[in-house]
Image (tube, rainbow, N blue to C red; front, side, top):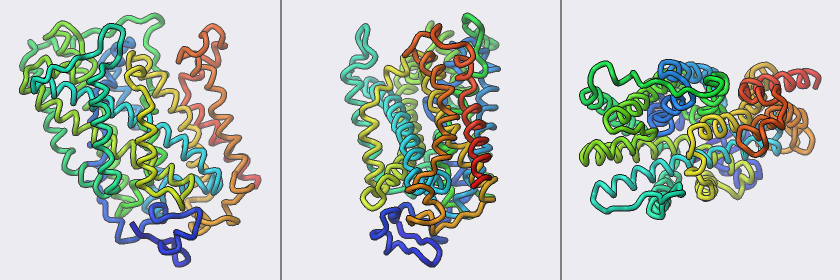
Length: 481
């Protein structure tokens, strides 16, 4: 990939610049050819995945009705669409990826902090989706008659499932090697196939289940009732990752209209509709087979070999499209930010894939509460603070104007103190640290009764709190500089 920074920096000079490489430089006019259909397809390709399928149905296990669960999914994605579009506007205007944008507020070296945090979260998601893909591959091989064993009593993953995990992991490397354009083509092809498969599954299940029963499955009764704010925070956190690094994609947009329209079409409604598919599958499995299946592979394997074979292949495709776009593009850029002259987009992606191997998603996903509240809520708090700082800096402090050349050099406007903006670091800490005791309690690392109720409840609002506090402090201190 070649690109330029105005008239002063060229791709040919990137090798001599410790803050630049050809992948981090602004996109050229020729590279900006993605239209609104590409962004809509990108989002549909990312939305149609197992984590979205399980989103609303896992909330039934937490005491929500299916209507409330689907509504919260839609509302959360309308909320996260706002920073998604606002931060996404950086891409078409300046052509820069997220780690370079972060240099404006955190400093040319301080941007390593948000980049690494965002990259590590992506590694976790990458691992989770590899696990879902592994389950689909494992089930498909059994449809072919291989007779692979599932987990034994007390285990969360079998040896054969782990081998499928490794195989599906290896498949992603090809797309990182080929770069973002290969991902765009994959999404454009895969999106309509996955929509069609989802509709077919719903139609088949509605034909199998007697009328009026499919959506009668009651929510589970839980002590204290459903935790609405905690769930909403977790659901917002689901795409809080992309709300930060969306310039990684919008830097290829033809215009602002294309990125805004494509994202508005491709995110909130498809998220709600596909989570509804998960609710229907969850309910149908309980009615037809006597056990509610949270994951689609469990339902499909009970529906016969043809449905299982086709459905599991679609799941493989769905998790592949989501993973390469949502969970490998970002860390490829993020880890490149650490040492641009040494780490390219490809190398950053390989590092992310290797880190993803050490996560153990089968343990994280053992309970729906751990998935929804601990994982989604936990990292959502971190990323909310970063989003608050980026939005305030770009819109309220700099009025959308950046000195792009200075983003790629030492001693410029974004040097601050040795390349670090101390006020941005303080803002981040103020947004995150008050939520930390609640996170430790919810995740079981400390006893809940050892945490004051106020701090325990604060975690339920984590993303909103951290965004507001970090953004407010940053604005107040930025106005004094």
